[in-house]
Image (cartoon, rainbow, N blue to C red; front, side, top):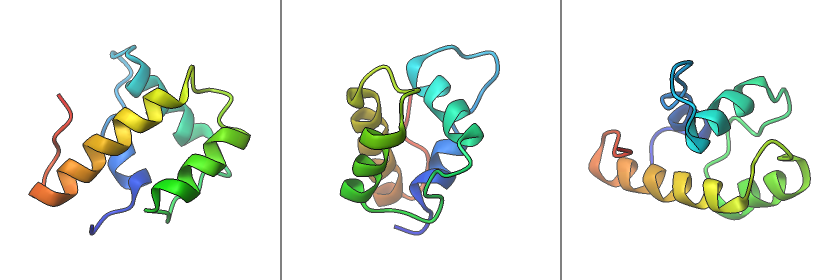
Length: 80
């Protein structure tokens, strides 16, 4: 994996998209403490469980992280 989860997540920001994942990306951008250099699922999950009150559920993170892993294994963005 070359880019961090945060870098991937920022590719999903879109002010015209109000999906849960786009909202997650927007709120992570606004979260000054978000672990921007992290790639590890468990560390990110722990952070979000304690600090991610902007997530409607951890399932949003899980789905986004799976798409991140897929994009890193194929070398591009895979979220539809």
